[in-house]
Length: 130
Image 1 (cartoon, rainbow, N blue to C red):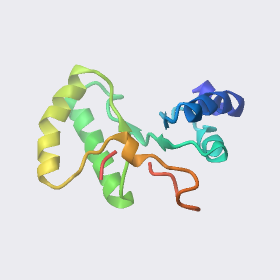
Image 2 (cartoon, rainbow, N blue to C red):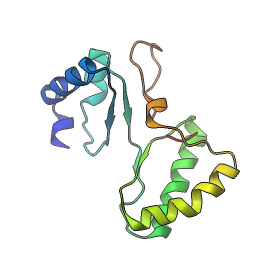
Image 3 (cartoon, one colour):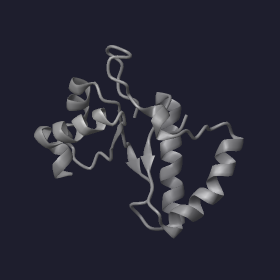
Image 4 (cartoon, rainbow, N blue to C red):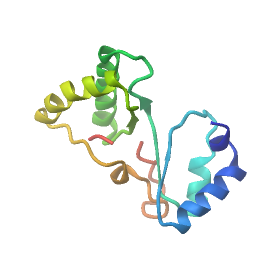
């Protein structure tokens, strides 16, 4: 969190990301993240996490957060969420993903939700499911 809040640190990190032709996923644990501004300045692709799926450790809580993420994606066109390698997360995803996909929700690689600075002037950063 401290690193993403520091423009100096993020400039060094994002310069390396650019050099390697990668993108950066900001977990957005710092309210004052410097990632969007520095990434735009350096023209580095980035995406921003909108919610953690498994801050609460039960399958029911993960399921509720996943449905929140899908609702955000429906409103915005796309949304990025982060889950961890936890049993409750795996259980909830195994149960919900087939249902959501049958309902037409598309789960995409985060690389497809990356904001590419300079490609769409004035466009907000995508914040992946559709």
